[in-house]
Length: 109
Image 1 (cartoon, rainbow, N blue to C red):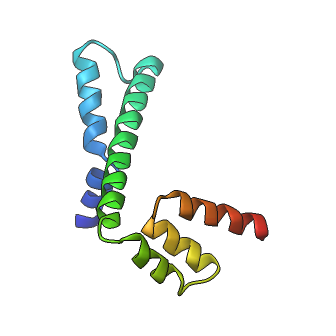
Image 2 (image 1 turned 120 degrees about the horizontal axis):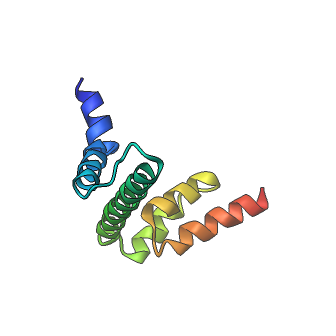
C-alpha cells in the first residue's frame, strides 16, 4: 500500500495529472475528448519532464561540488571498461567526459 502511493503519487506524479485535468475542466475543456486528452497529456508531460530535469540537474550539481577534478581523476583511475564509463557518468565531471567515454566505448565495441 505504501509502495503503491510512492510509485503512483510521487514517482508517477498522478497528482499533477489530476490537477491539470481539473484545471482544464474548469476552463471548459473536456479531458475525455481527443483534444482535451491531448492537451492534458502535453501539459502533464512538459511539466513532469521539467521537474525531473530540474531535480536531476540540482542533484548532479550538488554532488559535483564535493568532487574537485583531481579527486575525480583519482577515483576514475581505479576503474576500467564499462565500469569506468558508469563512474564517469555518476561523477559527471563536466558531463562531457562521461558522455565522450560512453560514446567511445560504444564505438570501440
